[in-house]
Image 1 (cartoon, helix red, strand yellow):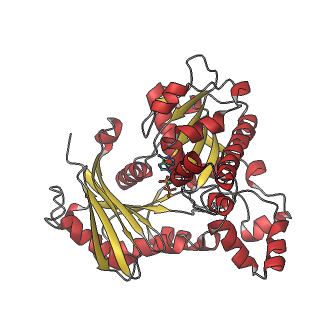
Image 2: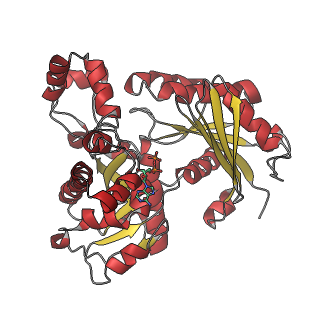
Length: 418
Ligand code: ADP
């Protein structure tokens, strides 16, 4: 194999910058032999930031430094990467980073696949700011910071959370509102977690030796944000998140589906603006809102085991019930599937939640194997009995790997599989 490309992967948020460096090329992609050189994140940007860094599979180091913005965070990360402290032999200087791949939240209707960042693409990402005012501006700051530090010549690639869902048909993505609202403001469902969905669908078909067209799944990405997607013939057919990530499943702090009339009612009764209500639906609802305790499922489960608290049980019940409801709905949308795939922090690590979601789904042909389920933590495995007609699998997601691979493909001008 030749010398791989060292791809820096960036996920720029409002107060955090997550990064990884993955060494890969077309041969390594084919052989699933990509190499992760390091990973880390800068949190609490804007003040005394906490920096967590990890070289390959070495121990995690925690550092602290005052960091004012994303550009300063990137500068800090790059200096660490090239330093002896990092101990990454492949990276001695900035010149050893060959390309940068960015997670971009919203690509609207414009970006059906990942794209090399040109001025025109940057303008397109800016045009989508209206659709993701909290996310796209930070993603753009990340892209600009790379340009400032590396200059124009380093290739940058944008990988969009929404791209995978651009295959959803019109009758599924439109809201039943006056049609001109779609025309004027592009109000429609877009869906998110697309890169995660693409990754688990790719892993599923690779492990099973089937083609994309033969891949029929309901994927459940259950992390802090949660979504369910119908993948039919390898493409997204329907998904639970909407115009924004607020729609659909019960999440850590988001309500998911609700009657839109509730927004004005809460505003009137609680003396809040509709913006404040939207913030409440995004950051004070979901598991946190119902339990009154935390958005962290691991903590909620421990609390339930120890104290059997009623509101904690209710929060978990609602979470699992909504997920089950969506599995049923998506199976109906796609006319049945071969497997339900669990991913994301909760989906990968919590057999108890997976069991609660699957309880009562026997009518679909899904028979959970309690032992396989209990044994499967953060690794790929089937968790249903061999005679199930609808299987369930756990596939840990790896969005960064897909971003690195898309970056290499875009830079080399090779078309990427969905
Ligand atoms: P994000 O969406 O921010 O990437 P993750 O995918 O890491 O988040 O998922 C975070 C969620 O996963 C949290 O609710 C966390 O409690 C949950 N989680 C992680 N490990 C476990 C576990 N062992 N049992 C239950 N929940 C877990």
